[in-house]
Image (cartoon, rainbow, N blue to C red; front, side, top):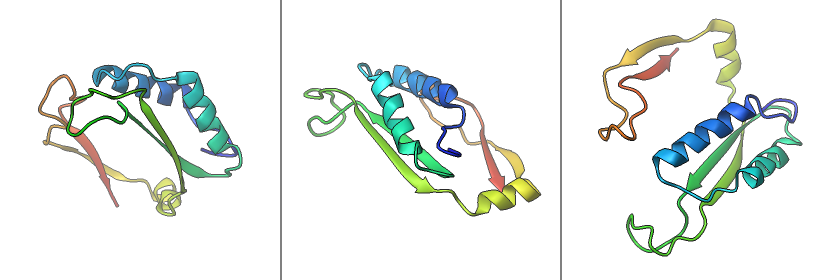
Length: 117
């Protein structure tokens, strides 16, 4: 985020929606989440906003039995100092042969892009 605004907000919300759909997480209050994100961004000149959505609190293990509404976590972190260096010098990218997930329903790509200085 920059100057109190979330860069590419609509794209981030869409990506979160697609991820929740893949994980069968229903019932996310998207308007409330967007409000929480914008409130977190208001007083920030430049920072990183992280959003985590889970199926909610429930019993032990992966069962969703007893889970209520999805859990939303919105957190702020300082803008990483090395980003300015990357903007000035650029980054080297390469493709990794490692799949992101074995389950094709959750795999978003057959390759992973990594950067190095």
